[in-house]
Image (cartoon, rainbow, N blue to C red; front, side, top):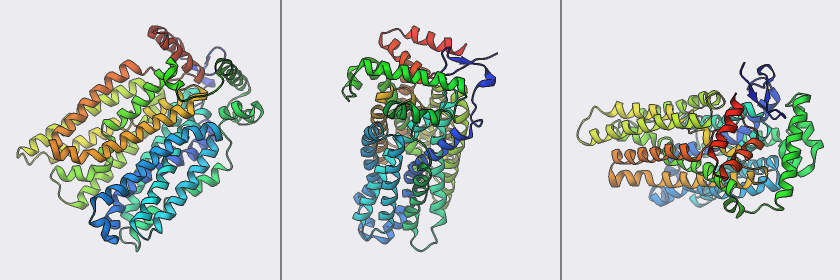
Amino acid sequence: MTIGLVPGSSGRIDDDKKITYFSNKYVLGLTVVAGIGGLLFGYDTGVISGALLYIRDDFEAVNQSSFLQETIVSMALLGAMIGAAAGGWLNDVQGRKSATLIADVIFAVGSFVMAAAPDPYVLIFGRLLVGLGVGIASVTAPMYIAEAAPSEIRGGLVSTNVLMITGGQFLSYLVNLGFTQVRGTWRWMLGIAAVPAILQFGLMLLLPESPRWLYKNRGSSEAVVTLSKIYDPDRLNDELQHLSNALEEERSGRNSVRYRDVFRIKEIRLAFLAGAGLQAFQQFTGINTVMYYSPTIVQMAGFGSNQLALQLSLIVALMNAAGTVVGIYLIDYVGRRKLALSSLTGVILSLVLLSVAFFLESSGNTSMGWVAVLGLVLYISSFAPGMGPVPWTVNSEIYPESYRGICGGMAATVNWVSNLIVAQSFLSVADAVGTGMTFSILAVIAVVAVAFVLIFVPETKGLTFEEVEKLWRIRARGNHNGAESLLEDNRT
């Protein structure tokens, strides 16, 4: 009989006592409501590609200025960087629930500002506001879900937030197509995003704060109310004991949380290196090159029709969402590390295929278009189940309680900075060295990512938060074998 890790004194329970993904509707409900933040994240990153076509028609200044077009697109990314950086602090001070509510208000206001913008500069301000909301949500949603989730299904539940992100991107493509014949086009495309933000605000008012944040900041009584809806009485007592032990150890070890300690304390530094590195490699292996520029890539491959390019891009977005569903199952079954490595292997192969297709196409071989499309399909099929959810899941579970907010915020900021670099450089690099060479560069980065995961990212599948902290303390002492022994003990 296989044994699963739980927060009990022995660390294990029998299979018939384990919580499964669908067995606790309360936890699943918390996850879906918190995941609306991911939906906002995905929708905002996808909707602007279609809306920009009509913004250019309405504002002559935008149509005549590539700089204004780039600013309209990238201002949300700048806002997301600021929001992610501030979101870590906001989560620690105000709590996960309050941070979500604040993000919803900022996002909704930004959506209304964009929809009513009389000129490009007000539109840019609205883009900054929605970016701030998205940045806060990108930190808060996975953290809130992880802290309410039982350890054996934590990966799948946090990955549900990634499913909401990819679902939001797919939804944005459908909305773009749906409003092309409606008066006001881009104003509807951008303004309608306020609806899920308002919905989440109303639902979050009915939900509790994260039980771990409550236990640390307001005592055990409020935390018990929430935890009792997740665990049976025996397991509830074990969970409370772990929370008590972790809080006591934390209070005796240090008096305050400081940003410099992220780099000064070795176990936190190692955890942050792993988390931030995964976030950076998620972007630098090219995912938003594919999501932002898939119509352009399709046209580069020889398909000149705008309609065909958009239809093929819609298929790519649908596959991204479908692949995330696969990841929800695999991340707690296969594990984070193995899933990332297998995902990166497929990414490397697909990037090599894309590179070869474009090299041959540039040499005059006109039959390579469908090979390039196949490369895109293979890429998204490989990336979506692994490197899509793994960085967010790992970052939600590898930091000590006191540093979970600031480290999660810093790592998310790394993701957004990397996102901006990739989005702003892809077309320029492709013009400078060619599309085939650009994909070759991304393939080399993916190889480096494999080495990074092998060296710096341990497996955390099924571990409690407290055991993850122990794992980093062991690795900080240079005893990687000891860390692996801890993992093996929990798998047997």
